[in-house]
Length: 273
Length: 248
Image 1 (tube, rainbow over the protein chains, first blue to last red):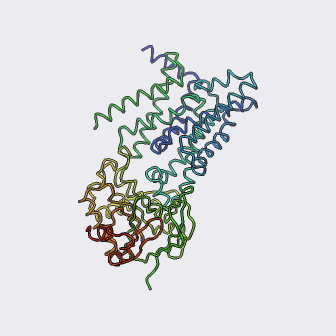
Image 2: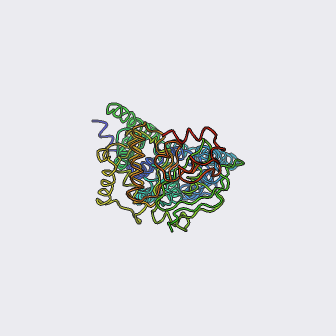
Image 3: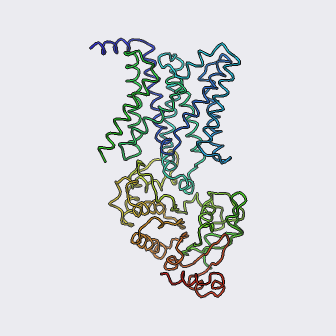
């Protein structure tokens, strides 16, 4: 009963309410994109872009600017560079991610070491802190997450066709390159939102885990997206409350709850077979 | 004069320093069933990819006098890829969803799938004898069943030209025969022009009206009978010509 009173107490705090709103919307965006990215073997793009965001946060702190506002365009550009390296320079997808992400980390470390004075702020972005999300960050997160979900829904059929068979989609007249660009830019947006919530080190897990968990137990594409969304939102809600009650780091707790969902789905998938 | 559905002039493709295709030229008329054969590395799949615009090439490929992109926009091409014989077992889609996805290219933004679309898919699946697979997970079907699902996807737009890249490579002999008869029926009864790549030169002669032997360049293009009677081909193939011509 003490746990419930602690949860009630948590809900009375504005910072917890902000965390819940921002976290749930961002988780929804992550899970919508995650199913497409996982099935296209592009799951680690989130990891790569998160590393780039480490550099963009460093740049923002250096310029005394809002990290999210600086990061959104820069990470979007990095995502297009990854796509272009893969398509035009014939660099393998995972190698292209590795190239750009290592550049991001190296740049971030160099900026942090030369500028100095903001290392503590910068390193707080490594693991994020959802409970410190500000009012403006909630609005940005809700707005961008809704845009991500809306665009994914509008392009659902093209994304589905490309995910199943990219060559066929191209031959049938679907604008594959444009849709790929849309997918990757949406991913960059959601990654930037995620760095505040779970940090650059763990943001890709919010893209990968709900999708992988849902794919263990469903046979329809739409059901996979809906279930991934349910897992993602529940993991954020449960993660925030567990971290509040047990005084654990919020980002890591959200990821651990996701692992619990994965273990459950994995077991259910085996039983269903 | 028969309508020329594809005209290929001096088509060359290079992968780095390796020339995969060299000055390939030939024409396909409406209603033809062209079987493309050749040894491994002869450029068969490269030719198909060039025709579909999936790789860059030198030379000219025209579809009824138009560029590929214009032709594609009119949804006149159906394509059955080779690699899809191995669909990811875990891919979360039913056979019917895959067949309906062939219609997505016809839709205007924002795309919506209607009940009519599912009825169209149902009819195509019925024609191909796969109605019973509609609600089954596509990744869990057998190789032959998956090929027929993908064929249904390729046919749902009623294409004028159907391009198939080694469609029977992963099938057992019985499924291979059933599949080949289905393609033959589409060609003869529905007038669909067929361009089919096969590694099996002997069996293609049984179904195709024209035979293109490729070895980075066109070695032979004509009817299978002409191939078997050609003394030039006897000089080129030696005893292998006899093996190809009498395998079926």
